Amino acid sequence: MPKRLTVDEVHALAKSILVKHGCSDGHADAVADTVTSAERDHAHSHGLFRIPGYVDALKSGSVDGNAVPEIKELTPAIVRVDGKNCFAPLALNAGKDCLVAATKNIGIAAMPLIRVHHFAALWKETEMFAEEGLIAMAFTAYMPTVAPAGGSKPLYGTNPMSFAWPRENALPMVFDQASAAMAKGEVMLADRDGHPLPDGVGITSDGTPTNDPGKVLDGGCILPFGGYKGASIALMIELLVGPLIGETTSPETHRRYGSVSGPLQGGELVIAIDPSKFGAASTWAGDAEALFDDLHAIDGARLPGARRQSHREGALEGGVDINDGLMETLEALAA
Ligand code: NDP
Ligand code: PYC
Image (tube, protein in one colour):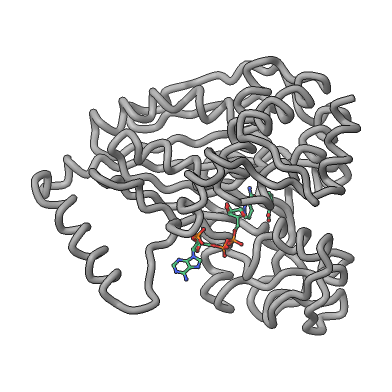
């Protein structure tokens, strides 16, 4: 029987491990919030499963668990956060209010984050802006894991993007998807749990299609979602979170920091939009709801994010099950 923890216990466990391994209270709290939200929403590939990687990064010194992120207004619409080698969650929190203020003032604003180590699911990072009434998009890259269209060697990161749309009487609509056919974290969970991958997710080191997650992780690579279309989105994300903001692309991240385990230094970009400033202040929300109603009128269709959000209440009331092996690892890290 897997061990069941309350959401508060998940947070306390994550935070205590991070503090023990060198994180300040603020960083430990911010990462624990991220990990706990993932467990609460059954996004297990980016929940407690990531704690050993966060600890590896602290132990190797690649991440500074005490860094104080620095905010700089590059223009009235561009608020840059320099994480100074910290985990991304506290850097994001540090810049949040400035981005919200700039967006509400100008209508559209962006927050590049540099020198951050990102290891999380991206939906939380747009949902938090939708909770402030803003539309938000977020992007980050990783290290070479995904083959470009036509190739069979890893080049792009699994490069997620998230988009959130605020709603008046419902949770925001949020999608969050890797530009890979499957996030690497999901491939790792399939490997751990002995599940085959669906067709079209991965190839072996010699380019042969495989359903074996172990072979994908051992020198193979993940394919982009939707062939060349997903590959172009992966490329766009590399450009937005690398060259545009003065951070590394996935291949460059690998060249510089590839020998380190856990989350590697890189960039993130958040773009926020104030829907009340685009000329449809009194209609945008209702018109969007009409579209959502049209979608729901189609049998079998649902909004992205709805499955994830549907787990929330149950987890807050009844807790979440933690995989046995993972629990042992976490207890050892906490001891
Ligand atoms: P999925 O393919 O599981 O889901 C992608 C999106 O599609 C979700 O918003 C999901 O909503 C939605 N969706 C799934 N099925 C349907 C459906 N039938 N109808 C409508 N919408 C649907 O996720 P990925 O494997 O692509 O990514 C998993 C996680 O990994 C993400 O949170 C991502 O941020 C994270 N990641 C992080 C990286 C990093 O560098 N930090 C790199 C890559 C990934 P729902 O959840 O409700 O099913
Ligand atoms: O699941 O692909 C992934 C991932 C990369 C970095 C964090 N998560």
